[in-house]
Image (cartoon, rainbow, N blue to C red; front, side):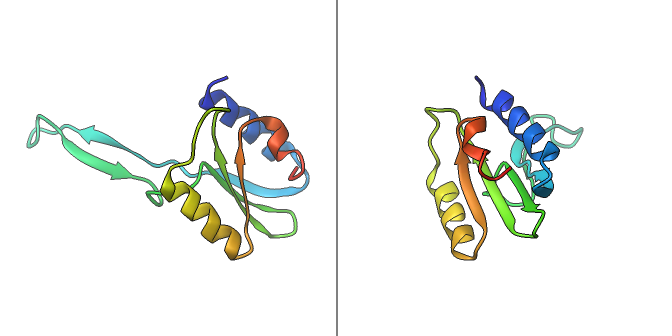
Length: 107
C-alpha cells in the first residue's frame, strides 16, 4: 500500500471516530513557480511548518495529537523524529502509523 492510500484510510477512520474532536492534514512541500519574470522557475516552499506532521488534531477530551504516516519500510528523518519527541514531551499524543491498526487505540 502506498503512503497516500494509507493516509486516506487513517483520515477516514479518524473522522468517523467519536473519540476524535477534529483532525486536519498539515500539507507542506515545495514546487517551482514559473512566471513571466522567472520563466525557468523560482523555488517555493509552502506549508504551516517545514517539519509538521501528516495529521494533527484533538481528541474529544481536547488532547492534541500528531501522526506521521509511513509505509512499513518508511523511516522518519531526523527532523520528524525530533518534532514528535518534542511534542510528546509537552503532553501531546504522538505516533508513527504504518497501518490502520497502529491508530486503533486512539480511535
